[in-house]
Image 1: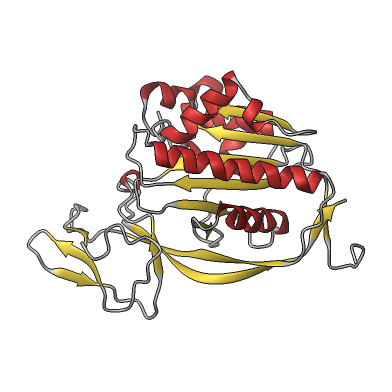
Image 2: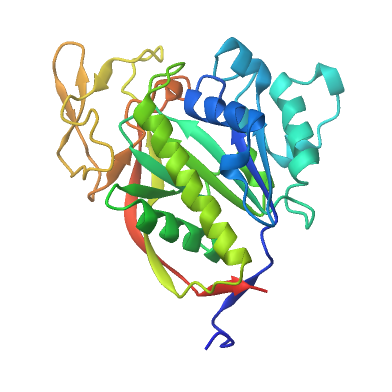
Length: 313
């Protein structure tokens, strides 16, 4: 019955934001948000206030990832409470502004849901990023999207590793949802990637709409890939890269990497093998934006999460 104690109750999600341009050279989100700012008919849903928003306009204008510092790592408590006004890095000022508009982070006034639209140069396909394995609302939404998007695949990356937390733009919302669609080069628009992102977002808004109308979503399980560690390129004593992603690993996001499998290839043709103790599922393989973060790929473990039934309070 709908009243059993196992049903999680959530307030109606009335305020929803769609962020594009958190990274100014990831063109699907930039283009979709600009489109919807001119004509929002496609994203309107009854009883929902939906705000499409360009998060890093200076970076969008220059078609770069960021101007001073990565906006999608800037939402730390330290940055959000920093004083210094115009002296602060541009993205820190912007983070404070976004936190005022859509937060404050962790407060009752914060937006219910923020969708943050990203592209990757890696061969990841369609990926939803989940920041908490305990968020039954987001798990149910992602389950709904996966089923609606089938037979095409939409995977879930769970980024909740205690040491690898990063402070995303979307983290100011009660329910933050990251969307990562690739492969697409920086500064480029590919129609298939654009359309996939558009369709996923449509399903996400449909879910919120159904939830707000009182639909109960029964308990479900969701397959996720939990971030384990970030693997750097092999380097020399001066920190210079001395090997590339091995051809057997390149473009093989989400495919199993077993102990002993080729991982990197040095410039003189030697193979470096994966030395881990168990099979992992690599993703963000050879992401262009992560060279500066000393990251060749991330390893993940495949898990199944259970979500309770949910309905509107």
